[in-house]
Length: 240
Image (cartoon, rainbow, N blue to C red):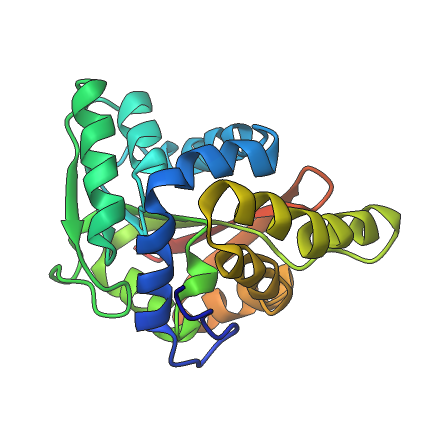
Protein backbone atom coordinates (compact mmCIF):
# COMPACT_ATOMS: atom_id res chain seq x y z
CA UNK A 1 0.00 0.00 0.00
CA UNK A 2 1.43 3.36 -1.00
CA UNK A 3 1.59 6.24 1.46
CA UNK A 4 -1.14 8.86 1.06
CA UNK A 5 0.53 12.16 0.05
CA UNK A 6 0.19 15.40 1.96
CA UNK A 7 -2.24 17.92 0.48
CA UNK A 8 -2.08 21.65 -0.19
CA UNK A 9 0.65 24.08 -1.10
CA UNK A 10 4.26 24.10 0.15
CA UNK A 11 4.21 20.37 1.00
CA UNK A 12 7.00 17.84 0.54
CA UNK A 13 4.82 15.37 -1.34
CA UNK A 14 6.52 14.78 -4.70
CA UNK A 15 7.76 11.23 -4.12
CA UNK A 16 4.50 10.17 -2.46
CA UNK A 17 2.42 11.55 -5.34
CA UNK A 18 4.71 9.78 -7.80
CA UNK A 19 4.33 6.43 -6.03
CA UNK A 20 0.56 6.82 -5.66
CA UNK A 21 -0.05 7.51 -9.36
CA UNK A 22 2.30 4.70 -10.36
CA UNK A 23 0.16 2.30 -8.33
CA UNK A 24 -3.15 3.32 -9.95
CA UNK A 25 -1.86 3.86 -13.51
CA UNK A 26 -3.45 0.72 -15.04
CA UNK A 27 -6.97 1.71 -13.92
CA UNK A 28 -6.58 5.49 -14.06
CA UNK A 29 -8.51 6.16 -17.29
CA UNK A 30 -11.40 3.87 -16.35
CA UNK A 31 -11.69 5.53 -12.97
CA UNK A 32 -11.77 9.01 -14.51
CA UNK A 33 -14.73 8.01 -16.69
CA UNK A 34 -16.61 6.27 -13.89
CA UNK A 35 -16.03 8.84 -11.19
CA UNK A 36 -16.88 11.88 -13.34
CA UNK A 37 -19.75 10.13 -15.18
CA UNK A 38 -17.98 11.10 -18.41
CA UNK A 39 -18.39 14.84 -17.78
CA UNK A 40 -14.61 15.30 -17.72
CA UNK A 41 -14.53 14.91 -21.50
CA UNK A 42 -16.54 18.11 -21.91
CA UNK A 43 -14.29 19.93 -19.48
CA UNK A 44 -11.24 18.89 -21.47
CA UNK A 45 -12.84 20.08 -24.71
CA UNK A 46 -13.49 23.50 -23.19
CA UNK A 47 -9.92 23.75 -21.88
CA UNK A 48 -8.48 22.64 -25.22
CA UNK A 49 -10.46 25.37 -26.98
CA UNK A 50 -8.81 27.98 -24.73
CA UNK A 51 -5.35 26.47 -25.11
CA UNK A 52 -5.53 26.39 -28.92
CA UNK A 53 -7.36 29.67 -29.48
CA UNK A 54 -4.15 31.52 -30.44
CA UNK A 55 -3.09 28.75 -32.87
CA UNK A 56 0.09 27.71 -31.01
CA UNK A 57 2.87 25.98 -32.91
CA UNK A 58 4.30 24.21 -29.82
CA UNK A 59 2.23 23.02 -26.87
CA UNK A 60 3.39 21.50 -23.57
CA UNK A 61 0.95 19.50 -21.45
CA UNK A 62 2.36 19.38 -17.90
CA UNK A 63 1.42 16.52 -15.54
CA UNK A 64 0.07 14.80 -18.64
CA UNK A 65 -0.50 11.45 -16.88
CA UNK A 66 -1.80 8.94 -19.42
CA UNK A 67 -1.87 11.74 -22.03
CA UNK A 68 -5.65 12.15 -22.37
CA UNK A 69 -5.36 15.90 -22.68
CA UNK A 70 -2.24 15.85 -24.86
CA UNK A 71 -4.08 13.54 -27.28
CA UNK A 72 -7.10 15.86 -27.23
CA UNK A 73 -4.87 18.81 -28.10
CA UNK A 74 -3.12 17.01 -30.98
CA UNK A 75 -6.43 15.76 -32.38
CA UNK A 76 -7.79 19.31 -32.41
CA UNK A 77 -4.58 20.89 -33.70
CA UNK A 78 -2.78 18.31 -35.88
CA UNK A 79 -0.38 20.96 -37.19
CA UNK A 80 0.93 21.75 -33.67
CA UNK A 81 3.82 19.98 -31.99
CA UNK A 82 2.46 18.56 -28.72
CA UNK A 83 4.69 17.38 -25.88
CA UNK A 84 3.40 15.77 -22.70
CA UNK A 85 5.52 15.87 -19.56
CA UNK A 86 5.06 13.85 -16.36
CA UNK A 87 7.23 12.40 -13.60
CA UNK A 88 5.41 9.04 -13.40
CA UNK A 89 6.90 6.63 -16.01
CA UNK A 90 4.06 4.13 -15.58
CA UNK A 91 1.50 6.74 -16.63
CA UNK A 92 3.59 7.83 -19.62
CA UNK A 93 3.91 4.21 -20.78
CA UNK A 94 0.12 3.93 -20.95
CA UNK A 95 -0.07 7.25 -22.77
CA UNK A 96 2.41 6.03 -25.39
CA UNK A 97 0.31 2.91 -25.96
CA UNK A 98 -2.80 5.03 -26.45
CA UNK A 99 -1.03 7.37 -28.88
CA UNK A 100 0.32 4.45 -30.91
CA UNK A 101 -3.08 2.73 -31.03
CA UNK A 102 -4.68 5.93 -32.35
CA UNK A 103 -1.75 6.74 -34.68
CA UNK A 104 -1.34 10.16 -33.08
CA UNK A 105 2.14 11.68 -33.10
CA UNK A 106 2.91 13.24 -29.71
CA UNK A 107 6.07 13.19 -27.59
CA UNK A 108 5.77 12.02 -23.99
CA UNK A 109 8.75 12.82 -21.78
CA UNK A 110 9.68 12.46 -18.13
CA UNK A 111 9.97 15.79 -16.37
CA UNK A 112 9.43 17.56 -13.05
CA UNK A 113 6.77 20.30 -13.25
CA UNK A 114 8.71 22.39 -10.73
CA UNK A 115 11.90 22.20 -12.77
CA UNK A 116 10.83 21.80 -16.39
CA UNK A 117 13.65 20.54 -18.64
CA UNK A 118 13.04 23.11 -21.39
CA UNK A 119 14.68 26.45 -22.26
CA UNK A 120 13.01 29.79 -21.63
CA UNK A 121 10.31 30.72 -24.12
CA UNK A 122 10.07 27.21 -25.63
CA UNK A 123 6.28 26.93 -25.98
CA UNK A 124 3.35 28.96 -27.27
CA UNK A 125 0.85 27.22 -24.99
CA UNK A 126 1.10 25.27 -21.74
CA UNK A 127 -1.69 23.18 -20.26
CA UNK A 128 -2.27 21.29 -17.04
CA UNK A 129 -5.44 19.23 -16.60
CA UNK A 130 -6.21 17.99 -13.08
CA UNK A 131 -2.56 17.83 -12.09
CA UNK A 132 -1.80 21.27 -10.70
CA UNK A 133 -3.18 20.59 -7.20
CA UNK A 134 -0.59 17.78 -6.87
CA UNK A 135 2.30 20.26 -7.19
CA UNK A 136 4.39 20.66 -4.05
CA UNK A 137 4.70 24.42 -4.64
CA UNK A 138 2.04 26.26 -6.68
CA UNK A 139 3.99 29.51 -7.08
CA UNK A 140 7.08 27.67 -8.31
CA UNK A 141 4.97 25.68 -10.78
CA UNK A 142 3.44 28.87 -12.14
CA UNK A 143 6.88 30.47 -12.38
CA UNK A 144 8.07 27.52 -14.49
CA UNK A 145 5.00 27.83 -16.73
CA UNK A 146 5.76 31.52 -17.21
CA UNK A 147 9.46 30.86 -17.87
CA UNK A 148 9.04 28.28 -20.63
CA UNK A 149 6.21 30.19 -22.33
CA UNK A 150 7.11 32.47 -25.22
CA UNK A 151 6.03 36.13 -24.92
CA UNK A 152 2.33 36.30 -25.79
CA UNK A 153 1.93 32.62 -24.89
CA UNK A 154 -0.94 31.13 -22.90
CA UNK A 155 -1.21 28.84 -19.88
CA UNK A 156 -4.44 26.93 -19.23
CA UNK A 157 -5.13 25.14 -15.95
CA UNK A 158 -8.14 22.81 -15.63
CA UNK A 159 -8.71 21.83 -12.02
CA UNK A 160 -11.20 20.95 -9.28
CA UNK A 161 -11.76 23.92 -6.96
CA UNK A 162 -13.13 23.30 -3.45
CA UNK A 163 -16.92 22.72 -3.53
CA UNK A 164 -18.90 25.96 -3.33
CA UNK A 165 -21.32 26.80 -0.52
CA UNK A 166 -24.92 25.72 -1.01
CA UNK A 167 -26.87 22.52 -1.66
CA UNK A 168 -24.98 21.41 -4.78
CA UNK A 169 -21.65 22.03 -3.12
CA UNK A 170 -22.74 20.03 -0.08
CA UNK A 171 -23.92 17.13 -2.24
CA UNK A 172 -20.68 17.16 -4.20
CA UNK A 173 -18.70 17.22 -0.95
CA UNK A 174 -20.57 14.12 0.30
CA UNK A 175 -19.95 12.35 -3.02
CA UNK A 176 -16.29 13.33 -3.05
CA UNK A 177 -15.56 12.42 0.56
CA UNK A 178 -17.66 9.28 1.01
CA UNK A 179 -18.76 7.74 -2.30
CA UNK A 180 -15.75 8.39 -4.53
CA UNK A 181 -13.13 6.77 -2.22
CA UNK A 182 -15.23 3.60 -2.02
CA UNK A 183 -15.68 3.31 -5.81
CA UNK A 184 -12.08 4.27 -6.49
CA UNK A 185 -10.78 1.80 -3.93
CA UNK A 186 -12.85 -1.04 -5.34
CA UNK A 187 -11.76 -0.45 -8.94
CA UNK A 188 -8.12 0.46 -8.35
CA UNK A 189 -7.36 -1.57 -5.24
CA UNK A 190 -5.86 1.57 -3.68
CA UNK A 191 -8.42 3.27 -1.43
CA UNK A 192 -5.86 5.74 -0.07
CA UNK A 193 -5.35 7.24 -3.53
CA UNK A 194 -9.03 8.09 -3.73
CA UNK A 195 -9.06 9.44 -0.20
CA UNK A 196 -6.21 11.72 -1.24
CA UNK A 197 -8.24 13.04 -4.20
CA UNK A 198 -11.03 14.73 -2.18
CA UNK A 199 -8.55 15.88 0.45
CA UNK A 200 -6.39 17.52 -2.22
CA UNK A 201 -9.43 19.28 -3.71
CA UNK A 202 -10.60 20.61 -0.35
CA UNK A 203 -7.09 21.93 0.32
CA UNK A 204 -6.80 23.60 -3.11
CA UNK A 205 -7.10 27.41 -3.40
CA UNK A 206 -10.44 28.97 -4.27
CA UNK A 207 -10.59 30.08 -7.95
CA UNK A 208 -9.96 33.75 -7.17
CA UNK A 209 -6.96 32.86 -5.02
CA UNK A 210 -5.42 30.81 -7.84
CA UNK A 211 -6.10 33.72 -10.20
CA UNK A 212 -4.22 36.00 -7.78
CA UNK A 213 -1.26 33.62 -7.74
CA UNK A 214 -1.21 33.65 -11.54
CA UNK A 215 -1.35 37.47 -11.64
CA UNK A 216 1.49 37.65 -9.11
CA UNK A 217 3.55 35.47 -11.46
CA UNK A 218 3.00 37.93 -14.31
CA UNK A 219 0.03 36.44 -16.12
CA UNK A 220 -2.99 38.38 -17.35
CA UNK A 221 -5.60 36.06 -15.89
CA UNK A 222 -9.27 35.11 -16.16
CA UNK A 223 -11.22 32.04 -15.14
CA UNK A 224 -14.63 30.42 -15.44
CA UNK A 225 -16.44 27.71 -13.54
CA UNK A 226 -17.82 24.59 -15.21
CA UNK A 227 -20.76 22.33 -14.27
CA UNK A 228 -21.97 24.39 -11.30
CA UNK A 229 -18.44 24.99 -10.08
CA UNK A 230 -17.28 21.37 -9.95
CA UNK A 231 -14.37 22.25 -12.26
CA UNK A 232 -12.69 25.51 -13.27
CA UNK A 233 -10.58 26.72 -16.19
CA UNK A 234 -7.94 29.37 -15.47
CA UNK A 235 -6.37 31.10 -18.48
CA UNK A 236 -3.13 33.02 -18.06
CA UNK A 237 -1.64 35.03 -20.92
CA UNK A 238 2.02 36.03 -20.77
CA UNK A 239 2.51 39.62 -21.85
CA UNK A 240 4.20 40.07 -25.27
